[in-house]
Picture 1: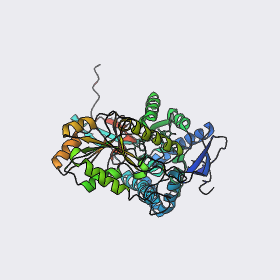
Picture 2 (picture 1 turned 135 degrees about the vertical axis):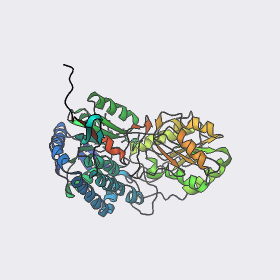
Picture 3 (picture 1 turned 90 degrees about the vertical axis):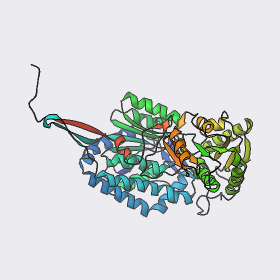
Picture 4 (picture 1 turned 45 degrees about the vertical axis):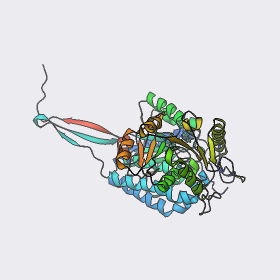
Amino acid sequence: MKFQPKASHFIDGAYVEDTAGAPIDVVYPATGEVIARLHSATPEIVERALLSAKAAQKAWAAMTGTERGRILRRAADIMRERNHELSVIETHDTGKPIQETTVADATSGADALEYFGGLAGSLTGEHIPLAGGDFVYTVREALGVCVGIGAWNYPTQIACWKGAPALACGNTMIFKPSETTPLAALQVAEILVEAGAPNGVYNVVQGYGEVGAALVTDPRVAKVSLTGSVPTGRKVYAAAAVGMKHVTMELGGKSPLIVFDDADLENAVSGAILGNFYASGQVCSNGTRVFVQKRIKAAFLKRLSERLSLAKIGDPMDPEVSFGPMVSARQMEIVKGYVARGIAEGARLVCGGGRLDRPGFYLQPTVFADVTDGMTIAREEIFGPVMAVLDFATEAEVMERANSTEFGLAAGVFTRDLTRAHRVVKAFEAGTCYINTYNLAPVEAPFGGSKMSGVGRENSKLAINHYSELKTVYVSMNDVQAPY
Ligand SMILES: NC(=O)c1ccc[n+]([C@@H]2O[C@H](COP(=O)([O-])OP(=O)(O)OC[C@H]3O[C@@H](n4cnc5c(N)ncnc54)[C@H](O)[C@@H]3O)[C@@H](O)[C@H]2O)c1
């Protein structure tokens, strides 16, 4: 098989196999063909990974941040040099067009390795002067062994967004990719070793939910960072709480994108396309509830339909193709179910809605109009190429409706009125907001959700706080005053 890795897991600097684990077939979403067969980690494999990560951690943390950072930055360089090869793997793992994976996956992973590699040498505590010459200093310390658990939409990016800050702070990591897309993280592990990371610093174990659960509950693990759905997040957060572990939760969303009638229409349509159809709609921060002010509704829908007809749907390895298949038959069926619910509940199908007559898991880019707040497609995360367009009249009304959701990952507004834009953003109950654009996630900016969409932030300097803790040291310069 063309994409068969040397073995399923990467532990202590080497590939490791245990065929006793349940099989994991890797399916190329564009054809349905099995391109690799891996095995879920057995308890022995999980134990080996934990021993390896635990054993490597102290020495890794004892290196200077500059030394650790140099390794991460070297890994970033290797990832960029191999961008094409890595993008081909990512496309086969996920089905995302090579046009997308070339610019948004290994490159985004490399950005994280470079950024946190750059920060690693500057991680310090502080000095706090007190009365009488006493003082406190704080020491920024690694947490220990961190577990990263990934979703299937951005396998390379997630492996790096979690690994880079964890390693920069002196932690070691065990990363469990999604069972749907297990290939990319192995490449990240190999590259880190090639760049000079000591054995055991970054390990990859494959598996289904129970492997993730075994890692989360192990007492040797200090922190868990999950990217996944809200139901999984609830379980993982609860399990981590038993051991009082640190957590980062990057979960799902049903984000609002508000288009006022003074917006630049072409930009607003572009934003709605980026926020609904990139990666065939399989993006957590997607603005899937598009609120359009009534006066421009017809023009917006007309232009949106015209622009969507320009999408080139097809073989994701064709560099001209801009829209590929869903990640799996299962996900495609889930999304088809939502399309049927949309129709049954009275939404108006403007375009798409069907499966393409070709092998693979292709659904057309789909737009519903006249969607109302109570409809299933306006309430639940679909995680596919389905946009719901809702009408609104006033700002006060739309803000109330936009926030009326348990989710709070992202939100966006298109308007030429800057005062209104900032007022709207202030009122959004969401972690990541956009004014006159959508879905950009540069490594320099914090990314994450409010409400049920998550806890903590990835990227930016803030991620350092989530992968380290401060030790407080009180130093007395005076005699000790005891009462007796
Ligand atoms: N906020 C973000 O940054 C972000 C990014 C990408 C995807 N997502 C979300 O991820 C979801 C889609 O991904 P998915 O279907 O892979 O999500 P999922 O929740 O089904 O699985 C996520 C990961 O958790 C593991 N897992 C499942 N049960 C577990 C358990 N009990 N203990 C430990 N691990 C367990 C899975 O094996 C997988 O690796 C969507 O909801 C999407 O919004 C969020």
